[in-house]
Image (cartoon, rainbow, N blue to C red; front, side):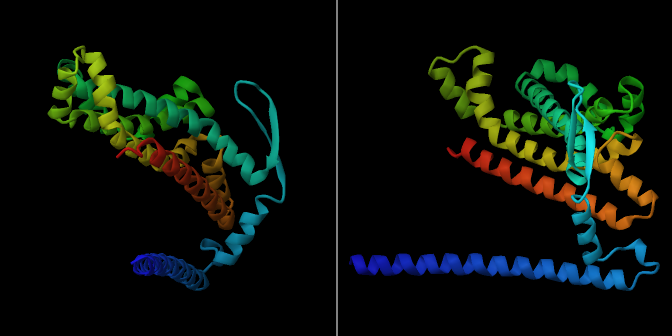
Length: 280
């Protein structure tokens, strides 16, 4: 009997391993196909600088780390000397991270309150519907006037983008809390609205809130490039600056740098998310 169980377990393991291997190979095949199409498109493009090929772009990525650049740290006024690519990515993070964190906290908090309190929701829904359709990049003129052409202005644009994504994640999550949960909590002695929100609403909405935050991580990387259009230092500015000088390979290298940074952040957050909602 034990031998039969061991054989079945081995068979299942082999099937899972074979399935994972096939998925991995399909992924590698898709990547190679993409590189092949890219190379073919680059060879057929004239003039050649309009679309640099994979090899030229790879050399540009390496070139970002062959020299060093000094950058100034906001608030402290200190100076960091880093490889050029990492230096400009760090400049982007100086306004990306504060904008993402503050926007997520603000949006989630307001979403929880409005989704839970019908009276406050009735008061503020018209304002939300008025402001929500405005694209984050439309606030660039106000960012320049209010904060100047620096990290604060770019952080404000990222804040707007993160705010609305997390607002609707929290709002939808807490609004869909099953009545059975609130009834059960009331039976157990939870009577105050604030206690009900903290003990029932937030845990129930947490998976949707985490999904919204993960979405905002990617969306805000898209927004930050536009936020640097008005001259704030960072990767987005370097992409535009390189393109203006027809150094398209350098632009592609910085685009890859953004993609790599996003992948690292997304993987780390997915690990964190699995641990936080392991109870599901």
